[in-house]
Image 1: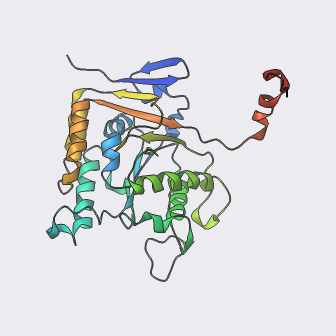
Image 2: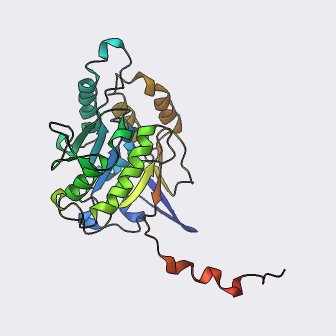
Image 3: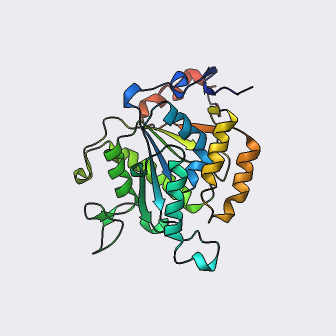
Length: 282
């Protein structure tokens, strides 16, 4: 018997279940929906969100993928060391196009693989420096530019719990860039977004820091499509163990939502009132 699609979202003590992303969403924006996946390395998003991408395409939600690094440190043989970036680029297009994402929606930022610590923030670009946008360089410069250019409603990136330094850096730099994208700072990078997008985490290498709140279950055919897409990365022999986890886990993915909240001192006022505490005595 063919499995059906079931999406379950936990909202407080409520369990919402439905056959579509829209049916369980707290904030679906109809025709305005637009997903942006942030991938520190080219294969991260398909590992953590290959089923989710297929469901988004099924519901006619435009999908963009922002690939942060150039893949230059991903070689598994001496022969590939000088050509691995180009090899991985070809593999990436094959992977994501097989899931229904057009080539023009796959964006390469081109930051040096395993060197992201040197590209935090935003700063004046040196002559001829790449990647540079509007005379500036840095992760926050690039992220802010593409957030304003694409105007996504929902963004997905690897969990902050991942041990890979590139994943940790991308996570923190992207979150502060969401704040920048909604303000009037750096006007040369485009018009501020009207609303900060909702942000979600995917599991790649490590478990979530807190239990996820969204579960996706699809027919086996979706899993086979995901595995087929992952297999496009033939040069990445080190992901074999991750592929085994994907296959063993079946047609399931888990996503966690992050609350993007600004500090509001007033909400703590009542916490310190006397009626909540036992009087102090010496």
